[in-house]
Each structure stands twice: as structure tokens, then as C-alpha cells.
Image 1: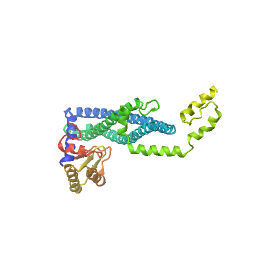
Image 2 (image 1 turned 90 degrees about the vertical axis):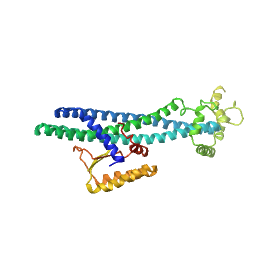
Image 3 (image 1 turned 30 degrees about the vertical axis):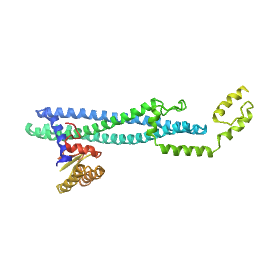
Image 4 (image 1 turned 120 degrees about the vertical axis):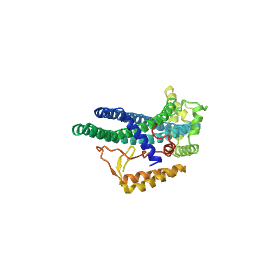
Length: 274
Length: 92
């Protein structure tokens, strides 16, 4: 078969024969093949451990982003209550970016999970074949003349070699994928380290580079909708000003000017002084 | 004929199925040559499914070489293109 299958078959077979070419003597082929097989099994185990580590790292990042989403949502609500629409919008934009990242991480974690499962299956298959090879080599040694043993050994070694080459390929693909994921995860980590998803209250109203980038990333209309929803929720619920009236009536020192949540935050201090 | 689906299993496929296998492979080649990325998953999936449903899996402890090795099921359209142009999935 040409095309798709031909190329793949040729390359794998070439790899296998390269492995076997190194030994001429049948006994040497046996030992060499078996030793290579056991080594490869160790590599597969290491490969699986690497995939698990990458997955754990992404899962940790997921929980941290989940916390950020909750925090930014709270901050957006507080900002709406305080009438600080710019700050609320900024929090919602960041929350949007964090949520988009979360979804992408979710997909990556499931992809790694599948990969881990596939590699574990391949490891079991390879282990079974190596075990079969070990048994077979004893039979070959006991039953066949040197010339015939050579043929049978090379058949068996080729069969196991093909499995090894295949597991090797699966591992390579898994590593390539985790590398891509790592690059993206590192970019998100940098945003997190810069405090992007952390606390917006410390920021001034001036836009920095991060904000401009985030605005491009986050979906504008979606943020508008969410902001409108938050405003109606907070406006329709118990409105903060009326809730603060009793507190103010008890504090004679408080200014009778229109109350804002900022005043409310300062009220306890004023109380203490009175 | 023994067919391996890379990353999965080896299957023993009776000779009577090889015509259809060739036809399905040509369909995949046609999709890739024609640059029809959206038809690739379906065409390649059909080829693999044919092997899975008509072949008998080779036992884990049976040591056999394959006559045909098919790339893994998660092969992308771009990777399939590289298979044809000679760069291949596995660097030489």
C-alpha cells in the first residue's frame, strides 16, 4: 500500500531492522533484544510519569484559576455596588479571560488523561510481549539448530521491536502535546504572577498594557451583558443605600450627604471616634 | 494480512477485506490531496473502523509483525499531509 500506510510501515520497519542489525550471533541477538526491550519498558514508565506530572500541573492551575474567577466575580459585584463601573468592567473582563483559560485547560486535562490511558495500555501490551519473548527464547535455545534459531529469533525480535517502535511513537506524540500545553500554561502562569487574575482593587483607573491585551482577548458584548445583568441584580435586590440608613442614623457624626459604600466602610471608624 | 493501528492493536484481516481496505485508503488520500480538511476525520475514521470491525485482534502475548501499519487515530489533517510528502510522522 502506498501513501498513508506505506510510509508509516516503511519507517517503523527500518527502525526495527536497525535495532536488530547490531547483533549477528543468535545468542547475542536474543540478549541484545531482551535487554533493549526491558530498557524500553522503563522508558515507557518514565513517559507515563511525565504525562501524569504535566496533568497534575494543569490541574493545579485549574484550581487556582477557579479561585480567581470567584474572586473577580465578587470584586465585580462590589464595584457595581460602589458605583464604580470601570472597575466592575475590568473585573468582568479579567474574569472572562480566566474562564476562557479554564475551559481550555479542561480540554487539555482530558486530553492528557486519554493519553495516559493509551500509554498505560501500550505499556501492558509491551510487557506481555516481552514476557512472551522471554519464554520463546528459552524454547528456541533448547529446540533449534543455530541456523533455524537465527530465523525464529529474528522473527520474534522483529515482532517485539515493532511494538517497541509503536510505543516509542505514542510517547513522542504525548511529549510533543504536553510541550505545547506547557507553553500555554507558562503564559497563563505569567499572567497570574503579574496579578492579572488576582486583585484589581489595587489598580488605578489608568490602563496598562495588560488591560489593553485583555480587552482584546475578552469578549466585549459578553462583558456588557454581564455588567448589565449585575447592575440589574444589585439594583433590584436590597439596594445598598437603604441598607445603610439605620447605621447612619445611629452615628450622629456621620455626614447626611448621599451615602455610598465608601462612606459605609468608613462608618465604623467614625463610630469609634464618636 | 496483519494490520496494526498505531497506538492501539494489531488485527488479523482476512484477504477478502483487502480490496475494501484499499478503497477506503484511496478515499483518505483523495481527501488529503484535495485539501478537504473537514472531510478528513470521517474518511480516516472509516478506514480505522473497518479494520477494527472486520479484523480479529492479535493477543498481547502473540508476537507478530504487521504487513501494514496505520498511523494513530488522532492523526491530524496536517500530519496526514506530511505523511504523503515524505516528511513522515517519525523523523528518519
